[in-house]
Image 1 (cartoon, helix red, strand yellow):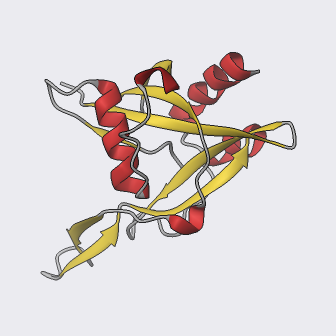
Image 2 (cartoon, helix red, strand yellow; image 1 turned 180 degrees about the vertical axis):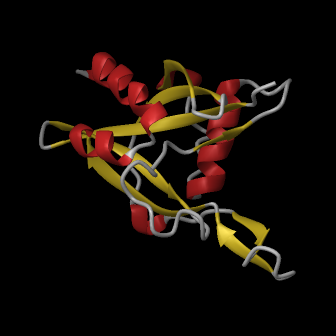
Length: 156
């Protein structure tokens, strides 16, 4: 069975233009990738946790910004997409602001280099940045591009 995840696409208007916040995955596999590697902050959840609760939690874990005090109606559904590996992603839009210099991501541990027996820790997210919709279309994972279209339709 394919896994499920949920995430938030934070947006703002800057000089009349719509900007979106994307994150770059940390770790050695993504280190040299840029175009087509960025994502919305998102992560998996288990039965019993709502997609919105998971999206809020993952945003906090990946960026270090707690959204617990925001009312539920601040989050607007963008729908679901399926990623290349079959994972279903439920996404929400949130108008807000975040300074990428304030990024405080949680860490994960992997064996690196592979088969070396050494474990290393990496941030789940190593960068965050604001992009115009056109820039974001180039940066974001191809399967997540429909989320940008959904946001543009909502906020256009």
